[in-house]
Length: 121
Image (cartoon, rainbow, N blue to C red; front, side, top):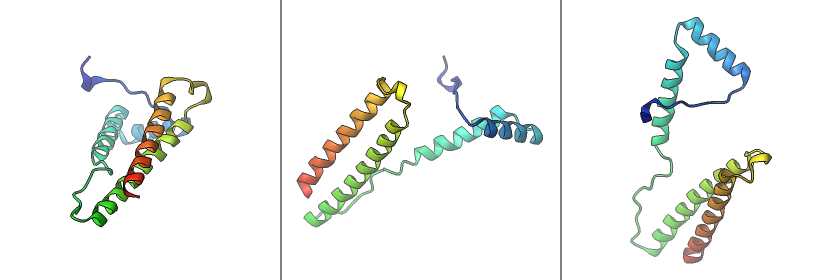
């Protein structure tokens, strides 16, 4: 299968889906075209990763400690997002691989944060 021609299933509220369908029909825009444009915008936005590292001054220990606090803060944000993801997995799927992966990621990130804090306090 061509990777550019994959199907994506999206679950949305029935009222939202109905309103979207009606708006597309009223304006004469095909729903598939509008959804594709939306997804393209979201993919481009995701490409602008908020966690991209920026060059930092690390000449002094104070600079390195400051940089490390920034890294710890970013890791904590990722951990919090992963915890929220795991918390939103339905109970009947919590023994599945997605939940286990999320829990594993949280533990690994917690370990990394502890090591970094130990190194730079």
